[in-house]
Length: 151
Image 1: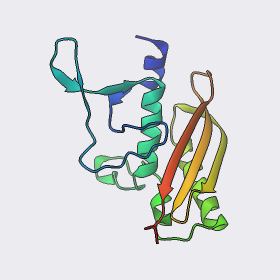
Image 2 (image 1 turned 30 degrees about the vertical axis):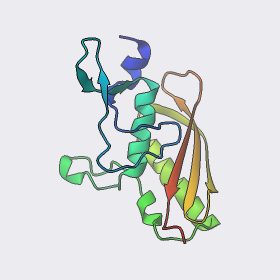
Image 3 (image 1 turned 135 degrees about the vertical axis):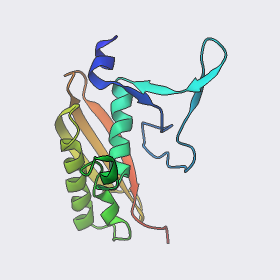
Image 4 (image 1 turned 90 degrees about the vertical axis):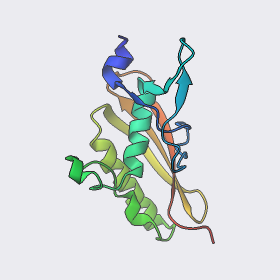
């Protein structure tokens, strides 16, 4: 078992594009790979990729949505911005909601920066630089969050 695996764990692969966190196709949440045996198996992620996926899933999940499963505090409050204007006030709210979600993730040792920019009329571009518990190279993550329907 590698150090990265021990620190960050492994999970099923649910998202295709971890670099931009914009894989939101319903019904496309499990991926398969061909094992050495030639049989298909479910794809997994380990190490830092697992952390990236976990953070993106946390941002996309409404806080409280998993309360019935015993995880009432899991998720973020970003969903409260859907339908709001893409202005400085709401970009600051998005930054606060991202910082709250990052604080709940034990594999994030320190948040180095969070920037929220206007990615268009209906999109916030959220970029983060994080120090993980392994103390290695800082992790850069980008997450586009859609706040409305393009007009």
